[in-house]
Image 1 (tube, one colour):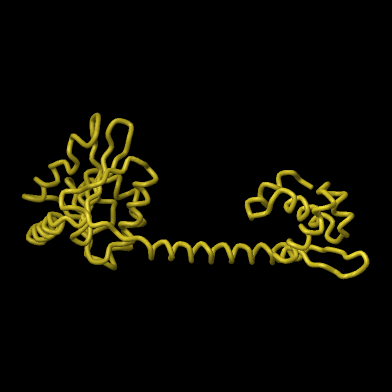
Image 2 (spheres, rainbow, N blue to C red; image 1 turned 45 degrees about the vertical axis):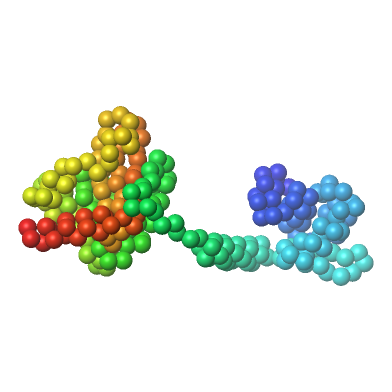
Length: 251
């Protein structure tokens, strides 16, 4: 028996004895309890309980006789069933947790700061997935659009999408509804979306995103870290998004 198999089987819920018995029987294909005991070195007093439990859980089967023999069921079939059960359980647990969650209503002046790279990427994905009607992306760095192009592009067919940049010539290779900022919108784009007090060190802004007149999301890099500021359910977000769209249409 390869010792490295045991940890993998233990991850499926087997204890060390069960993993040893099962992997031994897979190698033998068919054997008596005595043969399995001698090969696996699992205590004789435990061998029958373990074999019967593995049979009950669908890993092996029993051939009646004197003595009884045990044989493995098709490994592919067994593990496909386990995978299906695990995915089904995972989905049921996720839905159960979602039904328990209650989104807190933020005060008008509240915001959150994300400092984890994984958390930022997760929130960006959730934001693009959750948008229903409109999105305004104030882009300070065209590399943001290139990095997330494959995610942003499909939104163009489903929502009103406005991508605002400072210099249109920097984005000629990006096939998105891009608007070059002018007038009031240009002034807004030149205003940093994240307060200096939030971050330490020299800051480089990446983007600010307004979604469905209710969500605000801004990303910047300061020092060696990437940060994001999140706001939600603030009246100013809806006013700001509406005003930007009106100015873009006028231009």
